[in-house]
Length: 154
Image (cartoon, rainbow, N blue to C red; front, side, top):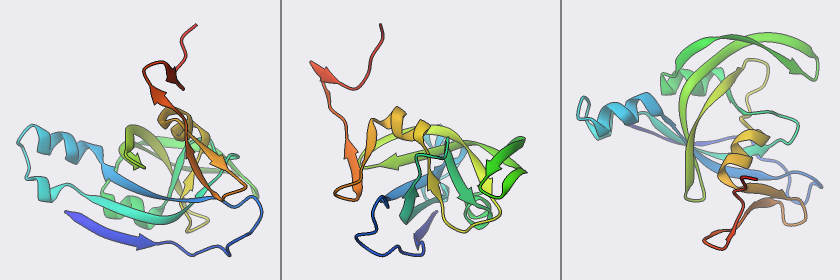
C-alpha cells in the first residue's frame, strides 16, 4: 500500500549548505513478504518523502515518529542518540528499504521525536554512492561503471 507522497517543510532555495533529496522509504519486511507471496504487492507500506535534509552530521537515516508509525517499522530496540540539545534515548528500527535516484539498499534507522524533518545521514549516502553537492544544492551520484566505480576493496 503506497502511503503516498509526503511533503516535508521546505527550505529556502539558495541557503548555503542546504541540500535536500526526494527519497522513497519502504517497510522492507513487507517488501520481502510480498516477494515471497505471503502478502499482496499493494499491501507493502511505502512512502515518498520530498525535502529530506541531507545531513553530514547525522550517521544514518532518521525518521520522525509519524512516518515510522505509518510504515509500521519493526522496532529493533532503543539507542542513545546525540542531538544538538544533548543525548536522548530513542527507538531503533530495522529493515527500512531506502531508494534514492534509482539506487537502493536496506538500513536500520532511528526515530526522531524532537523534529519533524527526516534526515539522510552519511552511512546510507556512502552505501548508495551519493554525496552532497553544496554548490548545486543536490545529491551527486558517484560513478558505478565497470572500470570507474565508487566501490573499493583494498
